[in-house]
Length: 213
Image (cartoon, rainbow, N blue to C red; front, top):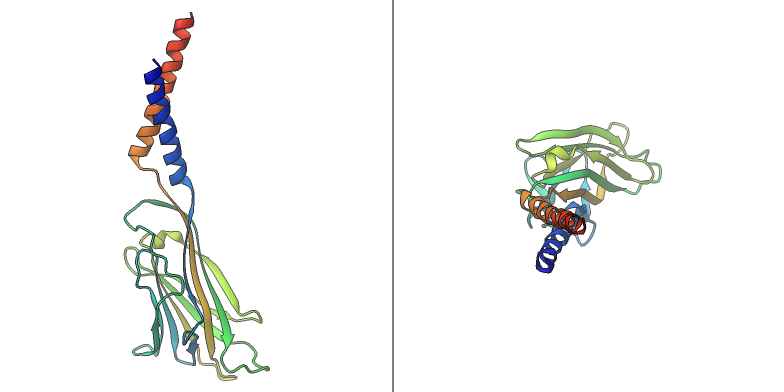
């Protein structure tokens, strides 16, 4: 009886710890931050492109005129590689954020105008965000994204400098960050292990009650 109890307890506790481990949310983060030659300067007609990839080394950023690369490419400052696109996740939330700065440092600049376009690739390219953003005094901009299109761990973002007749519309991208909170879904084997241990404990409990009576 003691051996059976010991084995059942081991199964129950092992299943519980495995289940708790898979249920905890993980933070996946990839960052492009200003550093040596990595202040992406975007003047009218140019665009800063960020290819985020949580699953492998190889995300990159660059400035393009729509055809050719005019600055970069650069690797991420923080390169997330631990996301497994073949696993099943519960994705709680996805946030994309930018920190911009003036390029010409004009004190009377009314604020730069940026068009931001975000594209997900799961399973085919889908535009998640495509709108104009007026950069305020703090030059910070962030928004939540639909997590459905990040299950492959990849996302492309384009920040475009629009033509403005009243002022020189140019800016620098100081930082671009993609964050995702996600927890792996427990596998059937884990659930079976937990269920087996609990069932064993329940059976032992019933036997003890029967012995007493």
